[in-house]
Length: 395
Ligand SMILES: Cc1ncc(COP(=O)(O)O)c(C=O)c1O
Image 1 (tube, protein in one colour):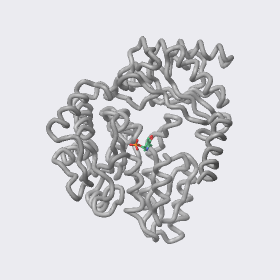
Image 2 (cartoon, rainbow, N blue to C red; image 1 turned 30 degrees about the vertical axis):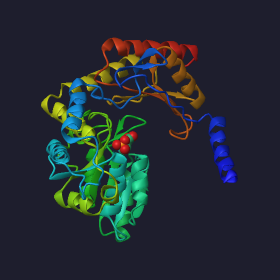
Image 3 (cartoon, rainbow, N blue to C red; image 1 turned 90 degrees about the vertical axis):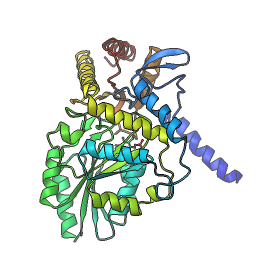
Image 4 (tube, rainbow, N blue to C red; image 1 turned 120 degrees about the vertical axis):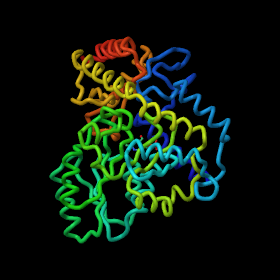
């Protein structure tokens, strides 16, 4: 035993030495556009609370009301006795949102991505995946017996050649999977080309729209709507942990046989507890709010535009885009982490990311903008960025 613990401690020590040990900052209150850290108010610029619903009175109220009416927990998986009318209501609402046949809930989008590939494919099939897809997709694909093909990030020539290879090698069915929005860049997948290529190779497209649902498109329906491809993506996976209330939970939405098969066979659904009523109630309210009134979606889009423009005009290197994920590239990992620390001291909470999360030399601070931010908060954040960048000779 001691030898085992020594080995683990050794590994942890290496993380400290490499300065990649992750420290958790405990918030002294709810998640919001401004939070309290170490007794000080700071502008929150690193949360997935894109629509500002995490602490919204309607969403909080719905969570409390759900506990009052439906209790605190289920004590069961869905198919034994863990399904309430509430779960059915949320699944129906998400299907209405996407205009799909049906939806199945999971305890996270991680679980949804873990479920989808192993359940829907077998040894004769192929899965073709973007190299920068989310870790849950990578792990989910590993659980499938299908042949794996990984194409270069957003490279349509490579996608096509991998599809041709899969067809030539006799794949029965081919699934193509891409993030709708890539979370380190705030960059959209070229869905028009992906849809076209999938049609030509008779491949089934799945898009994980975790960073786009509620955020992109005129009605917040995500990447496909943003790019004028509404109805062209047959299967979506998504999360309830980001824009749509920010609590937790995930889903797969699409054609009836897909969802039916997942309900019958997917292991994270069959062998893991169903979502608690408070979480389901909060998500129902979040979907209703976005469907009733897209103004929060428009606000996060407008705030992202404003922040991107101000940062670019201040001289920062921001990759071109529209998404509220705004990467500020500074190059060196230690520099990104040091700047993050200084920004926190100046009242702005933003995370630094370096190698191996992003390629060597592309370390960055990743700002995430919310509909709940005021223009004054965004201005304050830009000013803090400028001050810290000058102090570190980045500007
Ligand atoms: C693209 C993508 N898919 C899936 C997930 C996992 O979502 P969840 O927190 O619901 O497990 C994330 C979260 O970071 C994500 O960015």
